[in-house]
Image (cartoon, rainbow, N blue to C red; front, side, top):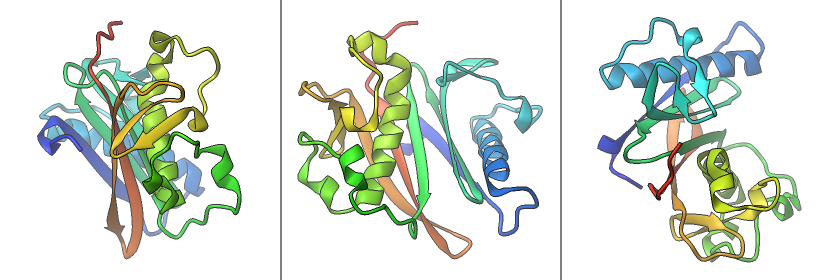
Length: 197
């Protein structure tokens, strides 16, 4: 995983949201985004007023790439300099979430590394993070169809597209304790190829 001085992320949680969990999760990811901006020395006037363009950068801060995620009562945000990473992805899930038997066929493929079979929930979050980092730029790679999780391979901390050994970025995950519950947080960083807007 890249050095934490190259990116910022925040998790925001609540033990008892007053609204439906999905609405609170979306709001909490915006609060996490505002907290990330503050870490970078930038103020957001309102967490509700942070417009993200093309799922990659902030309207008022075009040199910062961004990704959001939420699950139940937790929201997450990640920011990095677009000079370092044209796109980033973050995903989180509670560790107690169960992956349905047989669901792996929708996101694990024959080019994945052996490590992805050890923890299907962790693999799911890493693929989601890689998808978020890759999908805004998928046309740059001449991908012939709609991108789905199974089209992305993960191997030894790297990710790429099926049928190609080209490493398009890095991916990692870690566990975090939030109010006594563990979550998996996964991060993906698209390599700074010759991607231009």
